[in-house]
Image (cartoon, rainbow, N blue to C red; front, side):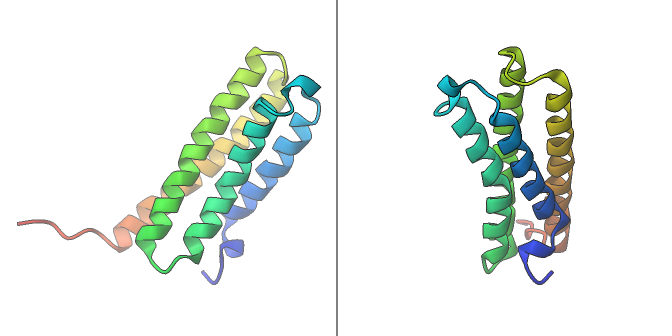
Length: 125
């Protein structure tokens, strides 16, 4: 890997950000500084933390930032579900976002597992 921009998971994160921005454009104006802002920040946090982790000098730091990206993914999933419950997003658009998000979560989880296998922690005897 030369840069975070080479990672498919980062690219998919950018696509999710664009999708979240498009979807939240139709939310009520009263939600602009609450759930819209929160969803956008969480979505942006996913590829941003992947990028920041890749920019660090160690795999342990990369793993740390990948876990932060996973946390943001879980937050965003919750906000999408809340948005459906409040009728801000229809089921079809929500399913599309959740599908994108689930793919990203699987990819981040696989990347963490791969990194941990490559660099296991020493066991205490």
